[in-house]
Image (cartoon, rainbow, N blue to C red; front, side):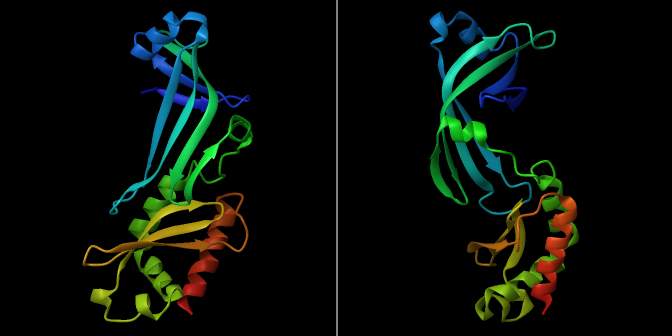
Length: 200
């Protein structure tokens, strides 16, 4: 497992490993840079909820060393991206190297974990009001039998929650923002608008 990873400007993954790791040894001894590799990534919801795995990705490519760029006892490896596959809450798709290279990170990626945990621990009552936006089947009935509402994903486009009944049944609902948010300030306004709509 890499100590850290980043994406270079050409779309290659830069992976930092301990210098004595098996991946570094294999890449250092590969002939003609012909070591193919697969990086598997699992995205797990940062809150306690049934079925916590939100997605899986696989990135395929050639693995080479990047000499002299890492600190003592470490080595950088480059995974030259050939293609990637993503299977997540939004569906499954193949991603080509150009699309991978040109993709930009969601502006909330560095804050999502903290924001979801905050919503879950401090705004449970407000999250519960979102049931009202899903129709009478979910919103009606006595409070003891209404499904719990747990936030599972947050990005510039909206909030996804998981509704979990006492019988173990679960389903997801996505609440799209009126327009994509660009930062936490815009997110705060979008969430306020969403909770206001749910309260009426």
